[in-house]
Amino acid sequence: MTSRLDRLFVLLEAGAGPATRRAAARQLGEVQKAHPEELHRLLGRLMTHLRSPAWETRVAAAQVTN
Image 1: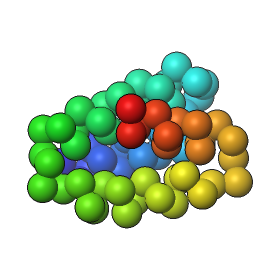
Image 2 (image 1 turned 90 degrees about the horizontal axis):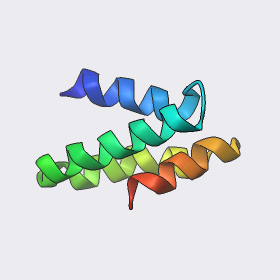
Image 3 (image 1 turned 30 degrees about the vertical axis):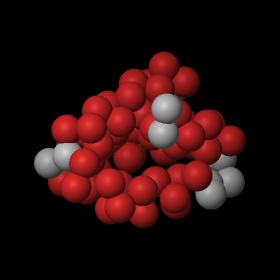
């Protein structure tokens, strides 16, 4: 699961476009639903992206919480 999370966070930060970033955000949300015990770890990693200087990354990170 860790490698999948790593890939999704890379796509969240550097995806080719908004659709790719949205898909990564959606999948990260699904991972969290499937593994609720990992919420704190996921949020810890997500906070970095919520504070990113790149607007697109912040928007995609916010979409994970929806």
